[in-house]
Length: 341
Image (cartoon, rainbow, N blue to C red):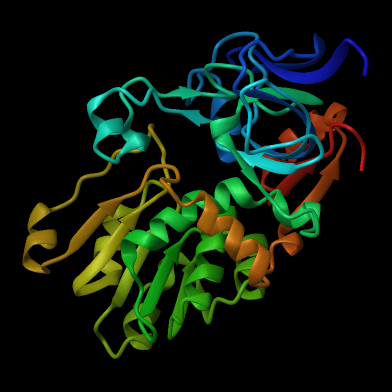
């Protein structure tokens, strides 16, 4: 193995670079060295590279937090992984000591450290991670399916919150990658009807491919009432991060609203009485929480239409091509292969 590797780093507001960096070394006995076999560009990475940034990253840090890799070296204290294991990994490192960590809410950790933001992430040929972040994946699972584990893990946490009952109607606002995961999982959970609300024709077509029973534009919201006997949906999921007002209008009385998408620049004015009078349950969902193993079990045992969502397969050096495609809306899922396919 060479001493240097290719990596994509955050330079400063709105700027990235593909650079040569030293291959990281194991420094602590609980760490593993991983060869990155595939990594994918996420909305979080796009937020980091906005000007001004939507998410603040440390200058010089390797970005990226979605990956599948192979263990090539282990620290002396590592017991659960061996060289040759295929893994994915959480990029969120909770402190384990604060109030939230000790009460089962590690996603709310007061000292959360995020790989790809605060420390080096996975847009690189190699990475070193604590073994507690790694999750083993069957080698028989296609690489282009396994790469979806991290974002699907976050969506699985949302599904755990809404507790969909078979036959219920769900509305998904936004048919980007997250919305498309929700569409598939809702159907797998027995949703009677899944209605996708999307403006972009390119994404509308993918919503249909992923199983949405009805795909409408935001201006056609009356069709939700028509499809639900005038009641509204049992569950509404905002996968955009700026649509709570619409979500409250689309849901039936005593229904559930899940706010999943994030947009720090978006603000809205709502009438709180709409929530009270309709007796609604409104929930937030931030990253995955204790759902990694369930997500791996899902991918290993239940077929999903995930590989069809990959619109670009690139080398790490072609990050700029993927970034621009994500930026202009011509990409859905961009997967890179740092060490070749």
